[in-house]
Length: 239
Image (tube, rainbow, N blue to C red):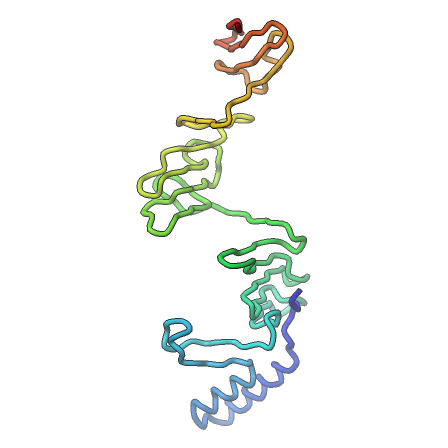
């Protein structure tokens, strides 16, 4: 587990030395660069092969678990944000150790979790895609449209879960139509089959959470399939 704070004492001393040096005058940019390097362990390089850019700022630390950058409010007792040399980033309240973590899990994988090791991610939707407000969009490289859109609400057909092929608008959806009611406005196919509610006897509305036409139940005592039509249960005998 990386340390939750940088080794501040040495860095503060070096930074103060740098500040005093700056106040006495500027003997040249190279001297300032050397003072800054000693104060913050920063190394600036011109290496196009690393990033494709002609110049960039690199922070080098002795170990992957060493803190590279941290931020806090003056009255805080802990850092609110820490970035480590291995790319891990931690966030906290400033009153306690960091409790939200983003890190590289492996090749092509990121892990976002809390200090208990659980996956927790809250998405607040406030950006419109067409007429829908979204919390998450997923594309494959080269797509012109999102293949998966998760609406911020999920309670209506316009703010639920949408899927498409990436080249045109989303064409299937899944959403919460009402309490205890999961809807889709499109064709639903179950390759493994569909299982309905089973009862040894004639069904009643009390057997269902939602009373709706189209409800179906298998009566194993009388070998019948019952359908609710209007407010009446009707059946077809099995052979």
